[in-house]
Length: 453
Length: 102
Image (cartoon, rainbow over all chains, first blue to last red; front, side, top):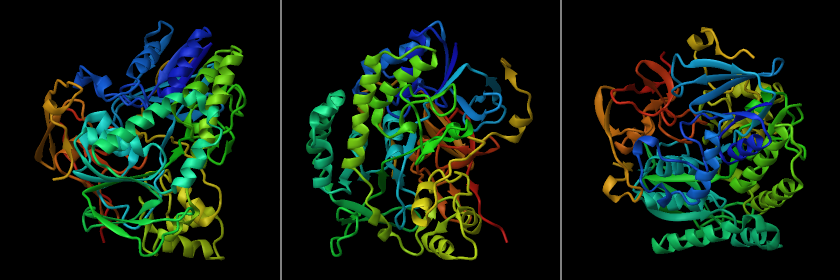
């Protein structure tokens, strides 16, 4: 069996390990130069860091996991972008070389089984001024601090929803930024209720409790306030962010009038959870449920021979992703996953439900928007333009909305505004992007090399 | 100034920095091997390097290749995501505009 795995994060690495154990030949592809994905983000090799474990917790476990890439039956292809999947031929189209470069090597693979572990990116809800330079997603702040030791600013406010804000604040402090506050929009009651009911069911994530204690200690040491029930509702500045306005919000995230407070900052990073990156699954013809790839008990999608694991099947964190990857790897290699693997996966998944219950998105976030607030960052479509177009009975439907307002038609192809536009205007979000990653015309015209299997 | 690269002597990870130099619209910018183009520009105090159709400034937003806000031109190849492209010594970077000319 030849198994191709797209993505070398926690899910992809676990899938590789278990597919190899089940006897398959494995090829692991990732766009990045180093394995680990967003979670186990590594420093560049050129940094020649002697003590990477000082900023990468669980480094020993990660080093064990990534060793599978050196297995004699494993091919590891870093810097490899999967730009398309041909459903009829079950052919994976790959570009190898510097990101968005010209003249990258074109290769194709036709595996017996394909495992998609393409992960997620930050979801950031719009607010007035979020398009200003100096406003970042939480993931951007983390990638720059942990991945290359760059601080996004001197005085940074971290805000949004979810436990991911804590490691981001820790990383920012680690590169010498001042974190003025960490704001969780959900009230403490919601957070507490979501995490603490039936805690024994979270045994698979026992390590997380220790992590939380460490984050709390780090924030306390640096005197960084962690406030719940408070959100960023506006960023201000002419050419870049200079000031950020926060306000107390209710459980539904509606603003409590008169509680606004402005902070002088040179950067703000905001994340309200994550959006899956299911383009390849869509190209393969897999059924999605609310943006997430539908999988059966063996992690197989609705398409024979195509498996999925990790955040594209539901936002559940790294432990869940690895547990799903293990099952997917085993099943894709033609094995029958051990009941213990399945149980571990099911236990790990309890985390996903808790995460959603403890850190939901309050529907009244829409009340933060003004008529001129940008919703589609690429095409600068405003909230006013979108709502007027959605109410226009002469051009009904998401397609007309898109063409009429250009929301989602820019370079990001609706990756950032997609979920927001569908929430604001109704209609399911479409993840149909046949060209999954940009390819240059010259590269497209060049002959494909490699293995026509 | 806004962003910066944590100085080597303050970084507990123990780096061995190899300096590199690129130019941005002809101006020299220094950094270290392994940095992304976006990381080098941010560490040099720049927060934006692209303008939108309306002329508004943009730089990094998502930092992981999803938003396409940080596009710039590297050695005459346009539309390169600065956050995903490792900088190479001698790279000639140009900022980009989508501004519509009338």
